[in-house]
Amino acid sequence: MMKIHYVIYLGCLLAAGPVKSQQVQQTTATKEIPSLKAVFAGDFVIGTALNAAQVEGRDPRAALLVPQQFNVATPENVMKAAPIHPEWGRYNFGPADALVEYGRNNNIGINAHTLIWHSQLPRFAQQLQSIDSFRLFFQEHIKTVAGRYSGKVLSWDVVNEALNEDGSMRKSVFLDKLGDDYVTEAFRLAQEASPNTVLYYNDYNNEQPAKRAGCIALIKKVQAAGVRIDGVGIQGHWSLGKIPLKHIEQSILEYAALGIKVAITELDIEVLPRNFQGADVNQRMQATPSTNPYVNGLPDSVQQQLAADYRALFQLFLKHRDKIDRVTFWGVNDGNSWLNGWPVRGRTNYPLLFDREYQPKPAFWAVVGLKNK
Image (cartoon, rainbow, N blue to C red):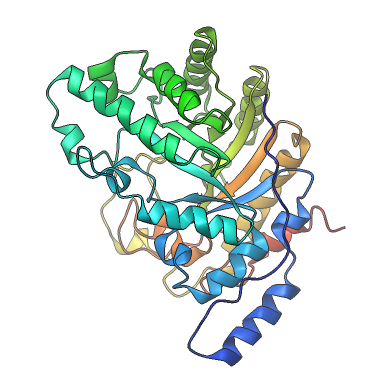
């Protein structure tokens, strides 16, 4: 089993901005805030998801905060198939290359996301009628993209969300055209194209018993074929006051028993009303006043519940630090979170440790307080 080695670099990136005095004030402020990556050094690495504006330096406050707090980053979109491979034979590597360069310049490792996913698939691939043509797309996409970033990224989410809630294989274009073995084949191609990269299977709700069982069966199938799979990602899109701690712990134990590492890959805690759990991007809810109750700020009672939930989660992660490689938050601050636009567009959500002004919330202090006693 490969172990990821990260360079810990505690410093701030000074980005160009319109008002120099604001930069100085923000630099001072971030230096006074404990660094998550430093607090949990020796336990697991701390990651975040980055959008294009953050990678390109168009968000000066993120440019300061991200290198100070995080030592690994996952791209929100630029390495998904539709953006990086928009047409047959044509790749758009510019944004992904910029991400890799950003990581190099800021001593931040890159978890590449994702090679195979049924969503955000290029239109041309969706329209392929021939099984042979689709298989060629599948093979060439993995070889080309994983090969380009071999030695430049720490890890890949090779396959994303291949399972239904009952643990069966999701009926996707990959399953339809390539059959039950497409996940194994994806890992085989990825290890050939990028032999020194850590390879993960990633999914949501795979801490729930039925889906966990399906995930374990899938991992065992890859292993039985003699193909390398290094870890499993539990996305961690959970809801306020409903964190399934027992299921999470049991999943960590059962996945680790397979000889692989566990990563928490897309952590956020939903504080707004929702009538389902998980992270299926195809599920939506209708916007009503009741679905967006905190437009003017989060009540203290909710803020404290969020802090308690994050504290309980990180207590569990620390308990199993020998099995967990990485904890990645899905966004830098509340304003960046995808939960502002899904499953209801235009909501004001508060799922992360930093608020819209890049200031630490009570949940941040609850988490770092576990180590700073």
